[in-house]
Image (cartoon, chains in turn orange, red):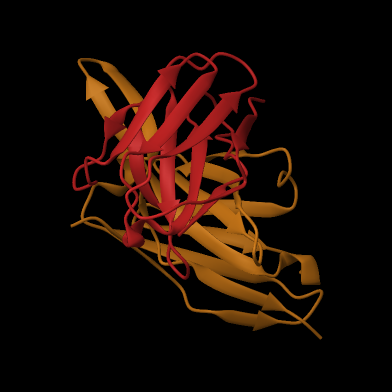
Length: 126
Length: 106
């Protein structure tokens, strides 16, 4: 069974930094993109970025470029999301998710975020 | 970047009703669209990929259609357990933008 297990809830003060982990199991980690999604309180889903764990190629949504850092350690099958200089507006639930892949011959297609972590609630408050 | 616009933002219907949610992409994306269901307090769950392919285990009352720029998610007979927020997502090019969400209530 494919599983993504995220680190626990965090309470931080403004200006602090935070690194959320997403530990995966049940599949070959470095053959699927891993993505991160933000959900602010009472709001919708926002796609933050993705990483290819084999070579740590990271792609960011323009809204989050420069604001967060996505990384991965393929030797322990874990992805990370780092948030620096936290603000109250970073208060949200952060999800990691695997990008599902369908291969036909030599062509592969990423078709959806098919397995999700349970989410990590981050609260930033003084 | 490709944007997706989802409507309506909310819908209230009765058990057994047919519910339709639409999603429009800012440029043609072939069939590169997924639909997700998110129940309160839970992570999202993918229902449909490639615009119309139902994921394993998803009840057949859910259906997706469309291609190009216009897509639809239909619940043919609304059930109490379908109360949730539904999101579309274009999967044609990174960044994979989500629609704004549609809250379905009974």
